[in-house]
Image 1 (cartoon, one colour):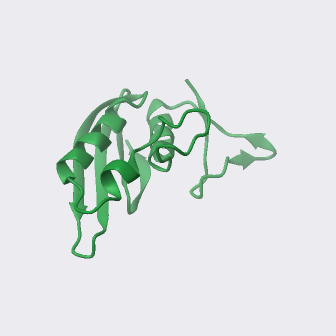
Image 2 (cartoon, helix red, strand yellow):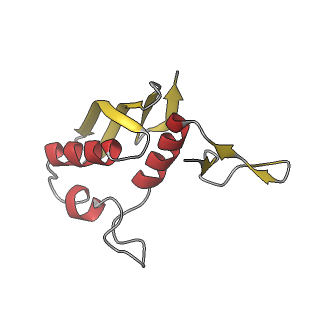
Length: 124
């Protein structure tokens, strides 16, 4: 599997007039994960079942942090190229904001980390 490399602002990377292809499983998984977490349920008009159910479970009064943690862990685990979730953290602040971070192992042994306040990166 291969995917197009993206810039930090989610544009497609183009170098010397050519698209940049990513073929490292960990880099591909990091790109797919970043896109998954930016994609809310109901946004895609051809299949409104796709996406993260933010309005159903997260953007509600008093969301259940355990359900959110389980939902995010499942999204990460089901991503092609991800072997398993190492750690997952979901926290709520007093001003009703939520933050999450995770570390996952890719099928090639590299570590993918990221979250709501940090970029999705691959560690060797």
